[in-house]
Length: 387
Ligand SMILES: Cc1cc2nc3c(=O)[nH]c(=O)nc-3n(C[C@H](O)[C@H](O)[C@H](O)COP(=O)(O)O)c2cc1C
Image (tube, rainbow, N blue to C red):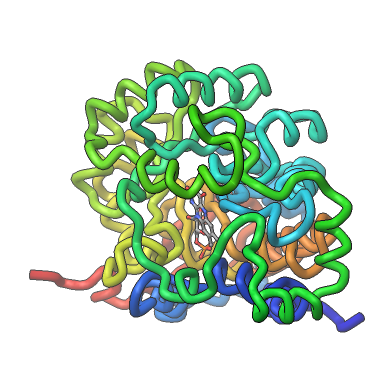
């Protein structure tokens, strides 16, 4: 077993162990992938101020996100199809998150259903909803989430229409995977993945198949998804969905201060500054460059969370220092899951936590809640001067 010291090591293992189609699905952005690349590389423009001779004993990363206690201010972002990255992937990840003491968010387009995840966990998780046209389906979905004890819904606002990822089209991405000579040849080399998949009954979209009208099998699902997303989504509809849920709501996919103000006006409990990990609007600013403007606009009115591009504890600390109250991680936990299942998700959380804690200490802080912009050296034009 190789020595794993960072998230990138997990990614290397993940690449080896999971079929190409699913690795590509995760490790790609839309079109030219400019935003996908800049989401990570723009973190390098921010530097830390090294402080010395500061008492570094009794450190804590414990904090709160939407009023919930967390071991560190990091939640697992909703990621579709994770039950294809590893058998029963969503259950595995939710269990790892629960044990660590951070929130897990289940995607609408998960393989394991809401009920499956609830059965194998004991604490409430968050549930992500896409904005779909079918009101009946939305009501039932929210009802299922309520019955499963979900403590918040995350409404994703940046996927009314879908950005194109070339590799998914070329690979013929599907769940379960289509059997073609090349996919069979590739899967045959992923032995532990294959054995896991043979040992589970969960191999297609558990929240949809058998629940959405007319979707009784994976074949009818693809025509449903093409039709289901609500292209007409507007703020009035967002309000309707918030009322339909009636509990805590996080609005995800906000990249513009004007949109952040609208979300705050609606009374969202939190917003997530996110460009969907560079999978939607290619050419959008990286999330980390968008963050300061949004903090300035609404930081005192609504809890601002952040995602897109986090691959280390240093990245987490930079986002917190710029004013985010917490972050979500996407690929960083998926790499762990694909590499080593539940233990891999725990490993990725351990790595991030250790990096976060040590870096915070080296910046002269003991309490994550006290960290502010003072620990950073930010280039004057970091957020850009755009005409
Ligand atoms: C493979 C993959 C699938 C995703 N599926 C969803 C999804 O179903 N719902 C959603 O709101 N966001 C989805 N996202 C976006 C993540 O929630 C998150 O915004 C993004 O991964 C953050 O960027 P990062 O991967 O660089 O951390 C997905 C991201 C990836 C990588």
